[in-house]
Length: 193
Image (cartoon, rainbow, N blue to C red; front, top):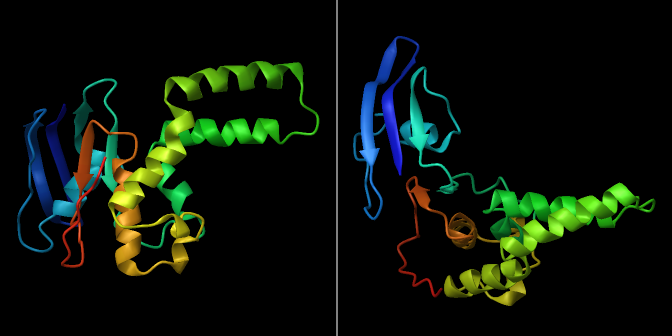
C-alpha cells in the first residue's frame, strides 16, 4: 500500500531520520510515537508528498488515493464548509471547477462542448452527482448540520473546523488515510456513513 526506501532527512546538521525502510500493509492501522521534535509530523509530510526527502523514495500502490487530515485550521477560511469537504477528493473537485468555468463562458465553443462532455463522463464515473449529498452525510455524522454547509470556514469554532477537516480527509473513501495529531477536543464522535 505505502512503503519507503532509504528515506533520509536532516535540517542543518541534525538528522531527523536516516535510511528509513518501512512497509505499511493494507488493512492495518499504524501509529508513530516519539518525543516532541523527533520528526513524526515531518515523516508524515514526506509520506503524503507535502515534503520531499533528501534521499530515498516513498512508494504508493498505483491507483490508490491518499488523504491527509490537515492541521492548518485556517487554510480554508475563505471557503464554504460543503466545498471544503469536497476538496478532499482533489481529482473530483478539479473536474467540478473546470466544468463550472466552461459553463460560465459567454463564448461557449465547440471545443468547450467536447471538453464539457468529457468532464461530465468523468464526473459521473466518480459519482460526482452524489458528492454534495455524501459530504452532507459525513458532516451530519460529525454533528455539523445543514445550517453550516454554506457558512465560511472562518465563521466556525475550532472544534467545528476540526470536524469539517476530518470529513474532508474521509471524503471520497481514500485508500490511505494519514492523521497527524488528530485532536477531537476531548469529545467522542460517531461517523455515520
